[in-house]
Image (cartoon, rainbow, N blue to C red; front, side, top):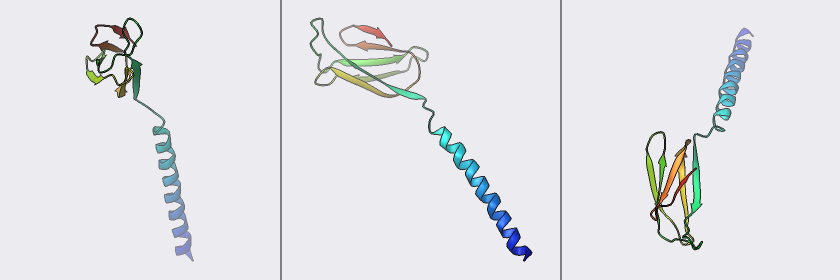
Length: 97
């Protein structure tokens, strides 16, 4: 009889431990340390610039990422670490985001 009680206590402890570990892991998924920058390259008349070289530079670390603008002038940088970035296009236009 004692053996059955002992097993249920051990099972209860393991179940409680799994719940605590599982719940603490759920909170970790909500934390994001990166983000995306999306924009459009246009010329002085407002027309889209296709194939422009676009660079994002992290102001604090000086780390860069590069891409080209698409068919409607759009560009996208994904999974950049949180921070302030300087965006440069090949036409010399600068924006600070």
